[in-house]
Amino acid sequence: MELRFPWPVEDAGASSCVPGWPMSGVSHPNDYERSDADPRLVGAIAAGLAVFLVCVPFLLLALYPGAERRGRIEASLPVPPQPRLQVDPKADLAQLRAREDARLSTYGWTDRDRKIAHIPIDRAMALIVQRGLPGWPQGAPANPPQQ
Image 1: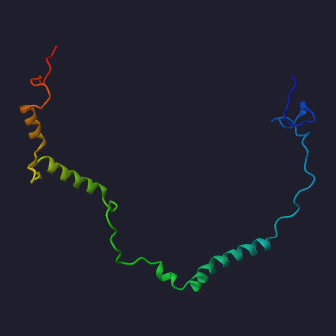
Image 2 (image 1 turned 60 degrees about the horizontal axis):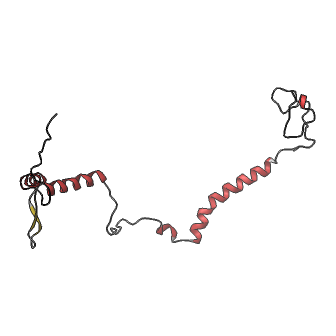
């Protein structure tokens, strides 16, 4: 069986591209980097960067003298207009549910001028069972017969 490779290979039988085969067919580069980076240059760049990072805040304060005062938050901030973000959502939800439960379980006026009132849900269901709804058939059994 003959091996075929999509890249040029000198000898397909002894190719170095396949793991486990000898590396005799591999070409080695003729040129390489003969020295490391100059340590004095690397040290000078690091020292320059450190000096830059230390000096920039002082330079900015010299150029913008009022910037330090403007960056502080005042103690008395104005209250934003409605709607505000929730500070304690669980307490807000509990308060909403308490208001809804109180409204759904008590008697009261919805519109006094038009004489519209609200009643508790249990009482409303009892009245519908007793009186029925207009347009709905009367006398349907509450519990269907068991078979």
